[in-house]
Image 1 (cartoon, rainbow, N blue to C red):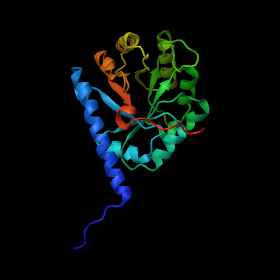
Image 2: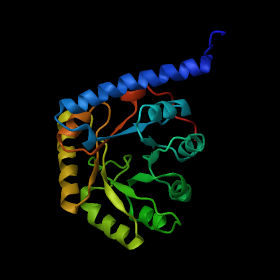
Image 3: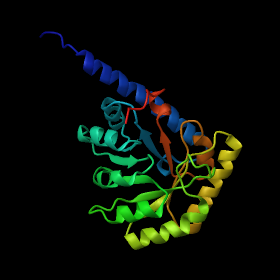
Image 4: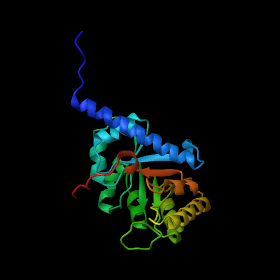
Length: 231
């Protein structure tokens, strides 16, 4: 019987699956070290600027949640991915992209304005959302202040949009990030929202300490990412 040959493509894919497996084991060890149960903290693999092969490697390692920051990139990758994944849209919302995102996303994690909720409510497929909270108050940052939660929840109720939880991006200063994460967790509890999406590769321990139910990880799974696509 002739020896089996492995094509360069399949060898590269196998190496990528193994690399993601090693990174995932490290991530899970970091979560467990905080005292949290693995089943209580969802890992969303952030695949923006990475290839469909990276998405396939995530699926091969048993992860089922993938996050993208660009609508077209999400559409392109979803169209060539056969694995049963839940696709999170993480980027800033543009109202002209909402019809597309309502068709291709399973969750939109970056809603911060009543106008966005109204547009989402007009779509045939009403996708569940997180409200994105920003603690900086900077105009160049996406997100609503904590004080806007009630108004946004009322708008969502009127538009029949399911708000699953809150999301934020932590400050680079660990002490500031801890305070922000604590405030977000308390807001989730106050408003009866079950999902608290906070924490990334560099601050997931703080987020887990403060009660995160979901961390969003790209670099911690795949290493440094390439340049963003030209839009």
